[in-house]
Image (cartoon, rainbow, N blue to C red; front, side, top):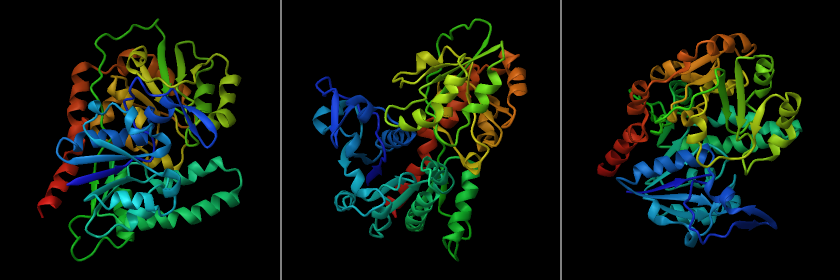
Amino acid sequence: MKIAIISQDAIRLPLLPSTPKHKTENGSTFSMKDKCSRATALGQRAQHMAEVLAEEFDVTVLVPDLNYPGEEYIDGTLLNFKTISYNWFEANWKFSKNLNDILINFDVVIIQTTTGTGFKNVSYLPKDVIVIVDGWVPFLVEFPCALLSYEKEEVRKDYWNMCVPQYVELMTRANLILYANDAQGNFYDGLAISLNKLNYNTYQKLPTMKVPYGIEDRYPLNKKQTNGKTKLIWYGSIYPWYNPFILADAIKDMTSVTIDFVGVEHPRFKKLYKTQYREIFEEFGSINYITGYNDEPSEMLYEYDAGIIIAQDWLENKYSNRCRIFDMLSNGLPVIMNEGSPLFKEDILQPVLFKVSSTNPKADLERLCGSSNELHVTKEFFYTIYRELSWSKCLRPLINYIEEKNNA
């Protein structure tokens, strides 16, 4: 089986030493590393999926031309899958001949439900191509939040009216819909029923499958000692569905807690931070923050007692599955989140996730941080989680599904 995974963003491409330091695009110059090897959650999931599936199938990751340095600059010996580029702008909410010419060579196509790139092409693929839609980012609840970057309601409305029908076409075409947590499973069961995927043949099971976001084995060999205070980290970029303001306000007078905001300005998505979130750091001068991206976060994360992330108390939070939580868990860090996250209901994660109020987190933080032992993740329990959430284990049901289709 030949499998194409459409990545709608950069993946972590290993660049050769001969790679130019900069890339010119539409008259602007960018860091080649920023553009072509620093992945957001979208690219990270696509790459993890490719690495595991490539152990049993012929896998190619389609990388946007915006984020592709050229095959001659990629160290292919470090990848167990192939990569090719496609025209991102041509395929963004449009049918792309370039992408179509690529996809017709594959038996299985996997696409995430973000950015709209590839939606039309995949919706129109021949019926003998197996279409797997990876819905770990639930488009319908995240997209209206993402549109908040447009101030004018008329613009947001026009985008919504253009994009949602394309999403519905894609989900209707899907042979299989993946989800990452149980709340998302309920969401997609309801969507599948509304799209007439329930019938006389599907009364036992809908075409949905749970594929959680996996974790990696980066448990610290030597945990660095803190200075007596509980040291927290907000790790990752700030987007409209997050609420760093209430967190900054909660900890400004707490003497037992420190917090560092690290990587809040993603190298490819700087505008949102600069226009909407910089003020929190200017207003609360006692907060430490690092805007830059860290390619090797493990050593840095070992310095902290716990991660923390506060989201808006919106519908998006009810169905979210945040990649950064799993990044921190991979490094042995427990994570503090506000109430409402569906991950609190995932049994395997309950002992390492800690809940605080969405409206007044200060009292909960004082209680949690007053007992550093409560926030500790033992090595034994980390490996209990890892056995259940390694990428190989998470993707085994998908591998079985593809093998069954291949043998049918």
